[in-house]
Length: 302
Ligand code: BGC
Image (cartoon, rainbow, N blue to C red):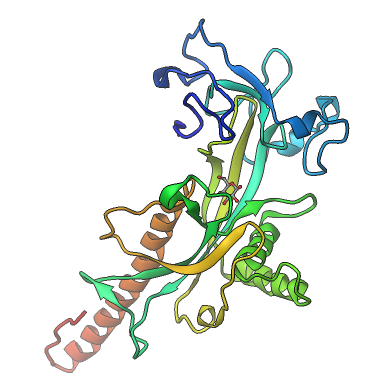
């Protein structure tokens, strides 16, 4: 994957960045005039850095524990190198960790139904609903302020726990409520039993630098009947100003979400809709076989 969001003259907080030539992103491309700008957000160089960030001295970092998303190289100063190439900025930027910074993204889906409980189809293709949030930091701006309710993996968490916790905090508004632990536990069980991994890897994120970058795992949990997810009382919390069911259908000309989230919704749609359409097709075929055996004619109705 070539990155496009983490190049350009300005970094997320408007710190200037070396304006890289898009054809010279790869490390293997000769670029003698490459002069990236070094930047570490001021809070990281404070004598007591935030607890979620690496210390200033990187000698104690166990790099082999950061390989889950793939191996990476190191530059001549001993800093990890972005596996997707140059960004025009060295240092950690605003990311807390050197090398990969892990996140998790929940993609909870169900079909849009009419008042009789029937799935709504447009041009023979079902309409999907997924839980989205409006990011309170404005996200990518414009329609990119809408996102999946994901977030960073906390110390000691496995990514499925992060996905459950973030969903609970950002989409169910259970940040400080008493039943937070129970909610997260049930969501975690649901994710482990019915989740389908949609993406795991590098993210083309505006915060990436030459030495720090985002990786994430996106898991889809699809409620085919809608009976469980229908009961969610969506409410924004934590970094989310609002939480809502958003629609996706392939006929949408313009579908934009934060970072790479729109691609994952499209991929999940392909999987769940082909499950649905093939089960319809199978039912039809079974029916056709049975009725065919009895000598009846069958027409398919969508
Ligand atoms: C967001 C995730 C996103 C990841 C990579 C995190 O800060 O919460 O939703 O996938 O960054 O862009």
